[in-house]
Amino acid sequence: MQDNELITGILNGNAGLFADLVERYQTGVYRTAYYYTQSVEEAQDITQEIFLKAFNSLPRFKQSSAFSTWLYRIAVNHCLDWSRKKKPLFIEPASLESRFDKSVGPEEILLRQESSVEIQAAVRSLQEIYRTVLILYYFQDFSPQQIADILDTSKRTIETRLFRARKMLKEKLRLSVLGGDGHDLLSEQG
Amino acid sequence: MTCYLNKDDWHSYYQKSLDRQTLDEMNSHLAQCSECQNTLWQIQETAKLLAKGRINLNPPPDLKLNIMEAINRSRYQADSNKEPPQKETASSHHFELRNWGFSMMAAGFLLFALNLSSLSPNLMTTQVTQLDSGFSKQIILPFTRMNQLAHTLLIKIDVLTDSQIKRNQ
Image (cartoon, rainbow over all chains, first blue to last red; front, side, top):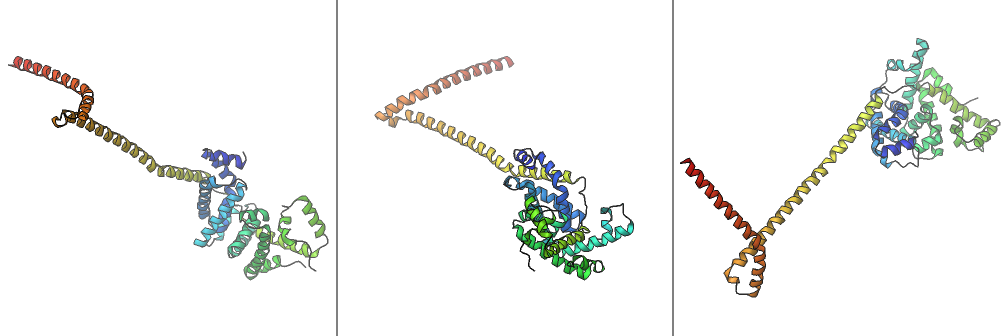
């Protein structure tokens, strides 16, 4: 069933159909929440709150836009509200171990953990408008147009923010990451 | 050299989230523009670097269940919050019934007063009172019959009681 068909069914009283929407979007919303919170427990709580908010707001959803866009708008706003109230916890590299591919060797896992933590720390340190576009574009694979719809702004603004965010990230990583690799990777060609 | 092409599409180009015609135009342009090649290369390198920060984290298996339970609790609470108006409706129904009761009692008192006025000797002299008296006679008729019936019943009860006393003696 398409999203719009499910929504029509839910609005007609079949609330159980919302489980299908949860199944469809829970991974994306959960990961988005994790990128903001850096905590598995907080990401779970926030994901639950986001879906609850979406369910309660469903009668106000205008089906002129995609449900996913509307849902991620709620998700991003909720995560930003959370970020303003709470500082993300420091993430222990060991706690990430289980999230990497076990087929690679322990040294590779360690390197990936360090890179992952430092890159996420660099992204997290950016202003929220730049952090958000980086998370949605590079981690969640949304197109600039989709991000523009989610953030209710123009595609041009998103492209500009992505370029600026890259420059800021380059500055952050130049100072801290990977023994200079960050600087090299983000330097201009030639 | 400043490229004439709009740079606002290179992130979309990298994701191939543009229409076929625009992609072809940008492909052709890219082949001959080093500035745009550099822009695209920067996006590619940023994507490579940030790929290291990606986490393929899956939600816990019970997340969906927890979400649906939270939704059901929320709906139950919403329904509970709607109960006071229902109670109000029930109480207003009782209030309406009580008003009906008061109205019936008031009507009864009115009928009783009319009957009393028909018996009043001071009002017997006027025509209005005569009309009123005629009207009252019609109203009082069922009460008179009820009174007679009650009187008969009382006599019978007295007789029965007397006979019972005599038997006991």
